[in-house]
Amino acid sequence: MGDARIVIAEAEEEDLSFLLGMWNDTTVMRYCGYPEGKGWTDVEIAKWWRYYLNNRAEYGAEETQFILRVPDGTRVGESYVGRVPEDFAVGDWRKPPEVRCLMADVKLATQWWGQGLGTVSMRLVTAFVFEQTSCELFVVPPHRDNPAAVRVYEKACFRHTGVWAWPGHEIMEMSRDEYASRFPEQGEGAV
Ligand SMILES: CC(C)(COP(=O)(O)OP(=O)(O)OC[C@H]1O[C@@H](n2cnc3c(N)ncnc32)[C@H](O)[C@@H]1OP(=O)(O)O)[C@@H](O)C(=O)NCCC(=O)NCCS
Image 1 (cartoon, helix red, strand yellow):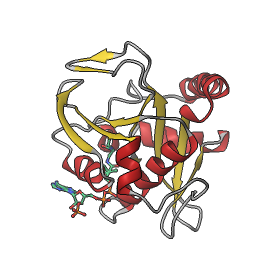
Image 2 (cartoon, rainbow, N blue to C red):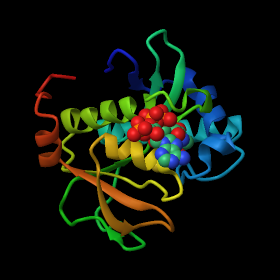
Image 3 (cartoon, helix red, strand yellow):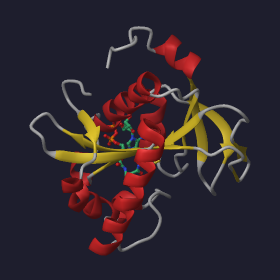
Image 4 (cartoon, protein in one colour):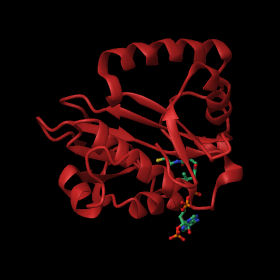
């Protein structure tokens, strides 16, 4: 999937060194709760990859690690889409019962910040979620001190909820109906 500026595709094993670099960059990770932990090693990321592949095999597109590239193929960032389990609750936020809910984030390598690529990427990930999965509610948890992330999600048409999950992290939401009304040009097979 992609547009003129960004192409998104599921990660492959050859992308692990790029992910390692992203997750060990403290500037990128400053406001990110996922993935947890600092100072990833080759051994840890190989273990994570096996865990990811198992999840992907069990849950399909609802557990997808994306790599974001510019059209010449250069990797610029990543995004993870994952299921929110039934009964999941954190802080003041609780997953609505019986609603199929996915959560995601987006991260770019620092040299690619400020060019609109985060917004383009998040719009593509959102299209994937609503076109390729049966997600009913898509949520993102930006930190209030991370205005670039908040703005990216606003521009991708997520709605503020005023509900705080992890400390400092507000849940922003988009329902399937909201997606359909905001992006009426998207239809089945459009992405
Ligand atoms: C968040 C992130 C993906 C944004 O990507 P990006 O490509 O730089 O974002 P864009 O250029 O598409 O848009 C950024 C918007 O934030 C605004 N912005 C950036 N810094 C800002 C600041 N300090 N204060 C207010 N607004 C700010 C920009 O002006 C722009 O909005 P505009 O188009 O209305 O002017 C990128 O900064 C990143 O990877 N950060 C580290 C990882 C991270 O924190 N991810 C979010 C996890 S929830």
